[in-house]
Image (cartoon, rainbow, N blue to C red; front, side, top):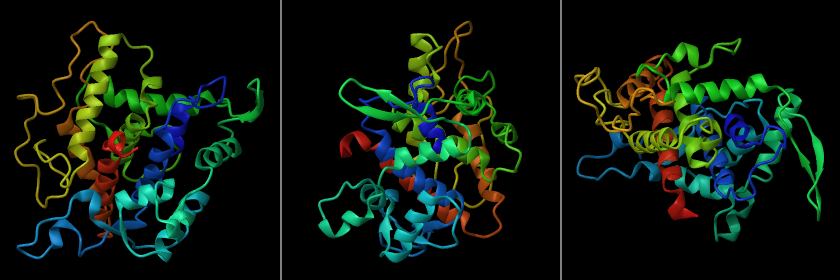
Length: 320
């Protein structure tokens, strides 16, 4: 959530683009993804693809019902507010929850599910952490509180995380270095970084991380993220990668350095600013490794919920 907002904020001006209609909706999706990564929510067993009765078609990943599996408070106000709403409500799908938390509903009985002032509350949280500061800025007709970046190292770390997946010279994914600036262990590091990349693309803030690239390199990076989102916004994730996530057993004969797979065609020739970055095969392996580190048995359903949220965000242009 906070990383996505940081990418969208103008460093010195301290506000988001007035023309960005996508970030509010995406931030609600980020909240669900964060709850899933913290193993608070999961796709319910009876709607999961692996538990549907034989003869019944699997529900689309974005339509599978999500349930609260751990109602323990996270300590983050927005997360706990969303978790409380989900706990008190009937089970609904990822697509429904993103809509309701965003206020995108005609059902007047569901208006109370909308999370209010998410961007401002996230920004104030970053101010409390010393990453942003608060200023008042005059916009001719009105004054508005803005939040310029106070600690550039925090935003630099987010930029490095994104660029390491998109423009690194190696197709490999080294999960242990993605959050190397953190002083505590980060659970599901590769999955977090992948979710950040997809959400930044969905929120129309990814371009802020790619401004130093040439036009061709930037377009190649956007195409690559589009391909990555398409592959991971389904369940099992990345089924054509050779290392699908969500299927029991090991990778199904990984390609290694062989024929490029889906998403690996957006390669910039040597000498340009961007290279192929992380391959979908390596991303899938890293996410699969994240899944295998879980001993609670909850992560499989949680990752399935993440896939549902990513699918919902991938269809945003047709929803809004």
